[in-house]
Structure formats: structure tokens, C-alpha cells
Length: 193
Image 1 (cartoon, helix red, strand yellow):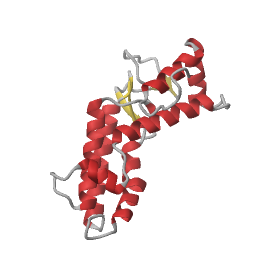
Image 2 (tube, rainbow, N blue to C red):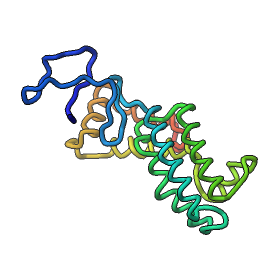
Image 3 (cartoon, rainbow, N blue to C red):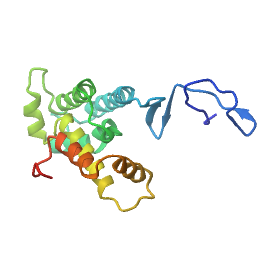
Image 4 (cartoon, one colour):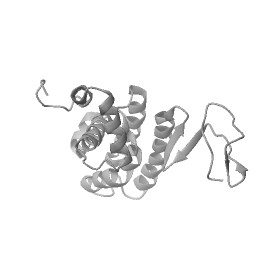
């Protein structure tokens, strides 16, 4: 069955069409792993990086390497097909170091495959050569853009916008957005914003 519930206690009174709904502790919805406490970003990232590594291996064997496709083509394939798999859902929060390290290690694998490089070659140099940002930067850019779009949206019918507006009403309207933006190292605006 696709119907279930998450809750803090077993409740056999929750029914749908005469059948009792099973209680689950973890579920996937639209590709995102949820638990009672919310999104499980660690499990999400583990699943996404595992999938990305498999694709990196297949593409590396089929031309995404130094003796195959041109570097520019390999970089474009990575940015178009592999990185989006790893980035799915990460715009929702600024990830912690352990989560970012897992994403970065997978990206480093892709960089080494594309350039057919040894482990001693500088990741920073490969990122610059292929014009691929570190995953920490990508996470912060995606996070910033996501919350900026929520803040600027005029359509309160969108559930995420509705929730964002509710949060803003409970806090000082300017400080919530300003603090979120200023904590993001990409913010280049005036400190009085």
C-alpha cells in the first residue's frame, strides 16, 4: 500500500477505506527521505551519492575521461546529468560538514574520472580547469536562491510560499531573511540590509 502514517505512537484507529494504515518510521516521497522529525538529509545524500557514483563509473567507461570526450563535454555532462542527482533537495538547508564532505568526495571522483587524474592531483586545480564549483558553494547558492525565490514570490497558493510567509509572520519580518542571507558567505550586500 502507498498509504501509511508517521507518528509518535501506534494508533490502530487511523483507517482509510476500512483498512488500518500501517505506521512507518521512514518513507520516501518525491524522492526525498522523510522521518518523524523531518527530512533525513544524511540518508538522502548517501542514496544520491551512491547513485551518482554508479553513473560516474558507467560514463567514465564510455568516454567521460581524458582519452574520450573533450574536457568541456565531460564537464557539461557532469553538470547536466550527474550533479543534479546529488543536488536534489539540498537547497532546503545549508548542509553540515559531514554531509558536504560526502557530496564533495563524489564530485572529486567525477573530477578524477573526467581528467583521468591520480589522487595526488589538486582538486582545486581540477575544479578551476573544469569550471565546477565546490559542493559547499553549490549548496549555499542553491539555498540562497531557493529562499530568495520564496521571499519574493507573490503567490501564497504555493505551499512552500505559504509556509515561508507563516514563518516570517512569527518572526521579525526583516531579520529572518536578513539573518539567513547574511549567514550565507555568498551575500555581498550592505551589512545594513
